[in-house]
Amino acid sequence: MIVTETGKYRLTQDWSSRGSISIAHFGKGHIIIIDQVDPKNRKVIGPALLDWVSWKLPVEPVTNSD
Image (cartoon, rainbow, N blue to C red):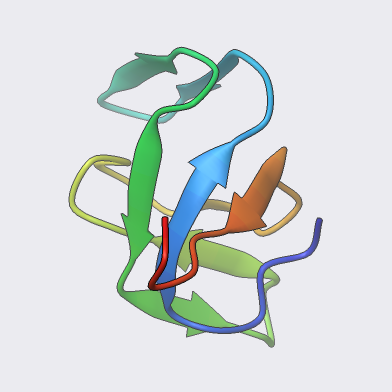
């Protein structure tokens, strides 16, 4: 899914990211928060991500009932 809005998202599969100064690994079902979206560079960032990552993520939006 291409993340174009801030909010909470649940991972639909295991996911890892490597940045210039960080490595992150999250398991399926982990909820991540996206604080900022950069449409020009097609990147997103959030507290758990530690760095800007591609906005193509294996996620689904978390609804209020979840």
